[in-house]
Every structure is written in C-alpha cells, then in structure tokens.
Amino acid sequence: MTPLIDAIETLLVDLPTIRPHKLSMTTMACQTLVIVRLRDSDGVEGLGEGTTIGGLAYGPESPESIKHNIDTYLAPLLIGQPAAAIGALRARLDRHARGNAIAKSALETALLDAQGKRLGLPMAELLGGARQTHVPVLWTLASGDTRKDIDEAFQRLEQCRHRDFKLKIGANSVDADVRHVAAIKEALGERASVRVDVNQAWDESTAVRGIAALQDAGIDLIEQPIPAREHAGLIRLANRFEVPMLADEAVADARDGFELAAAGFSGAYALKIAKAGGPRGALALAQVAQAAGIGLYGGTLLEGTIGTAASLHAWATLGELAWGSEMFGPLLLKDDIVSEPLNYHEFGVDLPSGPGLGIRLDEDKLAHYARRRRYAK
Ligand code: MUC
Ligand code: MG
Image (cartoon, rainbow, N blue to C red):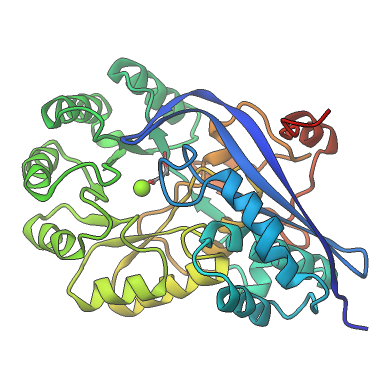
C-alpha cells in the first residue's frame, strides 16, 4: 500500500555561534533552525530544515514565520497525501501557497529524506546520482576585526579545513572595507582565494569605485554588490570588470536565472536550496546556469547539519562547481543536534552516506536546544 503522510512537526532550535558573525545587515550570535519531522503511515520519518539569517534582516521569511506557515498552511496540504509523490506534492504547495521558499525547502527535504530511507537510497540518488562525494568548502571571515580574520584564516589553512575565504563587507565605508580586504589578501597572498560578499549594501556608483579597488587588490569574486532587484546594474558591473560577479540574492530560482542570463549576465550563480524552494528547484537553476555558460557555486543560508546535508546531496549530482561551495554552516555553530557530524577535511566535506540524508538526530541535544513555548504554564 502507498504510504501516506501522517504527521508533520516543526521545532525552533536556537544554537549559539562560535563567534559573532558580522554581515552588512546584521550581526549573528545565534542561529535558529526550523526542524521538520515528517512521519509517514509506514513508520518512516523524514527530516528537513528551514533556516534564514538574522530574523527578518536577510529576507521576507523569519524562523517564526517558517514554523507558523508550515504548521498553519503548508502541513495541512500534505497530511493524508501519498508520501512518495514528491513532484506532485511540491506542485500542490506552490498552487495553494505563494512564496515561503524556505518553508517549502524544509518540507521538500523531509519528503526526500523519507523516500530515500524507504527505498534504502541516499538522497543524491533520488536527485540523479552523486557525481562527486567530496565537495570543496570555503570559510567566511566575518569577525569584524582584520587581525582576528587573518589569524582565523591561517588557522583554517593549517588545519587543511579551508583555502578559499569569503569576506563579508558593506557595513562600513567603502574605503574602510577595501583596506580590510586588501590587508587580508596581502597577508594570505597566493595561498588562498579571497572573495567578498557585499549583501546588496552598495549603490551602483559606490560599487564601481569599490570593485575597481578590490580588483586591484587581487580579489577573485564579487558577490551581490548591489540590491537584488537591480539586474541591469549587475549586468553592467559584470561587463565592466574583469573580476567576475556572483549573483546571490538576485537569483532565487530557475526563472530568475533565465531572466538574468537572457539579459546578458555573465559570471556565477549562488545556488541555495532555501531560495529555490528545495533541492529540486536549486538544481533546476543549476541547469539554466549550465545552459547559459554561467558558473555554479553551492551556497548556504548558514543552515545546520540537516540543511547542509540536503544541499550537499544536491550539489553532489552536479559535474562541476566552478566556484566550490560554502557549506560550512555547522562549523559556525557551537553545538549540533545530530548524532554524527559531517566530516570536514582536505578543504572540503564528504557527502554523508546512508539512506536519505544519511543524518540521525541526537534526541537529547534536540530537546536541549529546542525553543520552549514562551507562554506555556
Ligand atoms: C550569503 O549572503 O551569502 C553565506 C555565507 C555567509 O557567511 O553568509 C551567507 C549568506
Ligand atoms: Mg551572499
């Protein structure tokens, strides 16, 4: 008999970060994961995660809205439905609920995890099969302090943890940011690739000035220098400079990717399961990028291990990630809610093996970090 979806539970999990993580729009001391536990009538459980950055600072979904909208609107659309009909279920969510890409990504991940466990297959096999099992991972230097960032970079290089670094800029003046980035690049030299993420903080003329100086300093990639909706401006910047642009907030899904490519963008796209409504949507964007000759980059919204593993299963199916990935979310957190952490080594991370995500919850840790209901007696 076809298993049906019996129950969907959501939990908010607050995990402290190892140090403050400073972005142009917020500084994080804690990350909140929305964990989904989906139970099917055959007893199989699927896990999913929906995570954003800084409450509502990064985008229109907050952890609380993700939980609320799953509980109130999205879960009821899935309960009682055939659990294996993942394409039809995702279409059903899109037909009845607009937006909410992160919430949908968490549910799609849980559906894929359950189906993988049911069939005894890793999630990557449901998505086309792994073409790589070790994915390169960069580290974001974002302590807000140049000296600390340089020390952190050397530590990571010596541990063979990371050799590509992304610097979060845009919160300070352009001159201060350029000085900070140039000092880090000079200290690291050719030992590391240094990139920046401006997270939309500049207008176009500021971007022209900033990027010119960053290009001279030897920076390899400029991520989302101007606001997400300014596609024409991003294309002008891509045409003006030799250093490539990485579109992040500007491209959520395949439709955005098609529009930007058709309008003449060249450079790279950051794929994120959270932006695209799940692993399948992120891979659809990857296909558009590949057709347009645009480079791929495996992106994160700083998910914990479950969201990171789901992303890795998707990225593993791609032949090449020209710019590697940033699947370091679990390393930014002081603790974890899974029984076996991901294996980071040799400047990358292994694709977890085993059915579904290949990840098991640590129930004690989950209970410890799960947010209690504030108004319970
Ligand atoms: C972003 O915009 O890229 C990814 C790494 C990081 O430090 O922040 C995120 C979000
Ligand atoms: Mg970014």
